[in-house]
Image (cartoon, rainbow, N blue to C red; front, side, top):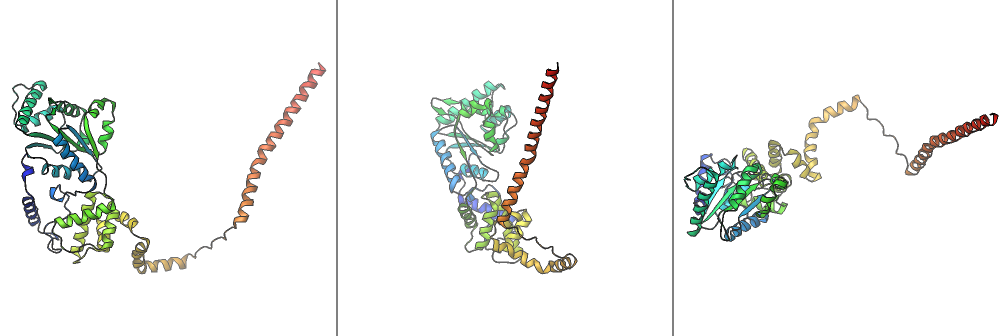
Length: 380
C-alpha cells in the first residue's frame, strides 16, 4: 500500500483497459471509447481537479508537508470522498508510509493491532501503554530517516467514541514540534453532529483543519462529464446538448449519481443502435434508475408536453367514451370583485351581532337581580 503513489498514469491506463476487456467491451467500441467512462470506482485517474476537490487535495498535501496532524473531510453521499483519498495516495510526497482503512475498526485495540501489523511492529507486551510506546519509537525512527506516516480512515461517520479517543491519543504522539503520524478522517456529514457532542470537545480541539466537500454546480457537472469522457478516450461528440442539460438537472451535482445516469444513458443508446445519446435515451435511462420524476421536472415546459402529445392518440378513445357518458359540468360564473367585498363585510357585521345581544341580555339580567335585591332589603 505504501508504494501505491509510485504507480504511473500509464500503468493505471493499462489496468483500466484490461478491466474493460474483461467486461466484454460493453458500449465502448460502439462509441469509440478506450474504457468505460462512468464507472463508480475510486479511480485516481478520473479524479476531477476542480472546485472543492482541487482545494481539499491541495490543502491535504500542504498539511502533510507542514506536519499539522489531524485532518477531517466530510461531505454528502456520493460526492467523491473515497476517490479523493485514492488520488491523495498517488499524489502525496515521496517517502510517505500510507496506511488506509476502508472503515473504522470496532474498538481501539483493533486499531492499534492493525497499526502494529501495517508497520511490522511486534510489541513485547500486549498492554496499550506498551503498544503505544513501541509505535512511537518506530515512528521516531521513521522520521529520522526522512519518512512520514499517513493514516487514512474512511467512513468515519461510523466510528465509535472509543476509537476516536485512540485517534486523539495517536495524534498526541510527538517528537519535539513534529507530529509523528498524520491522520485523515473522511466521512459523511453526520460526523459533524457527532463532533458536536460535549464529551468530544477535547478531540474536536485537536483537529488541525476540517474541510467540507459539497455538490458540484451545473457548470462543474458539465466539466466533470467532459473530463470523464476525455479520460476514456472520447474524441467526438457523444451527448446532445439537450441530453447533457437534462442529465445535469436531474443528477443534482452528485458525482456518483452523474456516473450512474450517464452510464445507463450510454447503454440505452447503444442498445438502440444510436450514435448519439439523445433526450429520449436520457428519459429511458432515468426511468430505469428511478430518476424519471427528476428528469420531468428539469425539462422545459415545451419539452414536457411532447410525451403527452405523443401519448394522446392512445388514450383518445377512452376520453371520447368518457365525454359521451358524462357531460362536462358547467362552471359557475365568476363573481365580480366589487360584489365579493360587500358580502364579506356583511359576514363580518353579522359575526358581531350575537356577542352584542348576549352582552345586553347580561346587563338587563344583572339590573333585574339588583332591583329584586334592593326591594327585598327595603321590606326588611
